[in-house]
Image 1 (cartoon, rainbow, N blue to C red):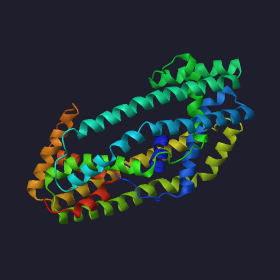
Image 2: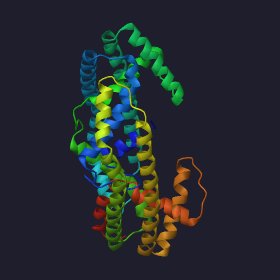
Image 3: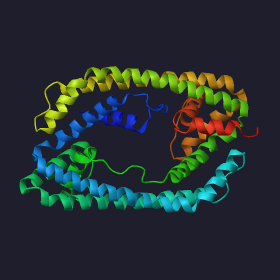
Image 4: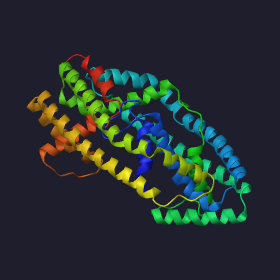
Length: 363
């Protein structure tokens, strides 16, 4: 089975349909559950050769649940204090930028350092989780299971072109960690809401770097907010219609296959083909909607912007890739679409930000 189904699950669990942010609850919960079932079937199939008993499975999931609870809390601690320390400055800078002022010197460096520190701490926590799980799961398995799991993990890593750090010692733990992760419920909301809001504020500040130079008026912001909101609704309805009926039609078989795989039976012939057909059809239709939505939004924005604003957006779009070391070539129309997609269609918080900006004094 391809990795596309994992993307389907992520799209729905995160509430994100690229390039637009999906509206909440546009997909029935039972469909989300069925996609989770498909992902879990794939995970269980991966570890099936180990022939894990029901008693072993219970102990493994209990171990993983305990470790993940601790991991989530420690990972949150890696970012919460640092952001809280900058809280007042973040809020002050956001308010200042909303009012049309420049980002103060030194702010970007503080944010970059905070992000770098968090990434480093998270990497350490990832390694500790894998090590702790591997050490904890070994006593629960037989020597034959350990040998089979190690060999299988290395084979999968080679096939995917990846390198499992830690060698054979951690390979088996890596396999089981991801094989059982979907079956473990961990504590939600380990990061305080006010910290999540501060992270959004930082994202808003970054987004305003590409909005402020265009000198958009309050009336234009109001028009853009309505345009993007209306586009979201149409886009998400069409994307949902492309996914929900095929999954619902296949619901009974998905649940039966999952029950069979949990009981130790193999995935039946034809199952993967049906799932792939659903995946391919959905992603093809979504790609069509992506292109259609980008074109329609770009066309409407050209009507809202003055020609000078369109030109400014194009010139700004040409400078953005250079800052990341990338070189892009294209027509002015393509660069304008690039600006529109990155600025208005790929940022989940764009409507809230646009509504905030429309209430600010004209530039």
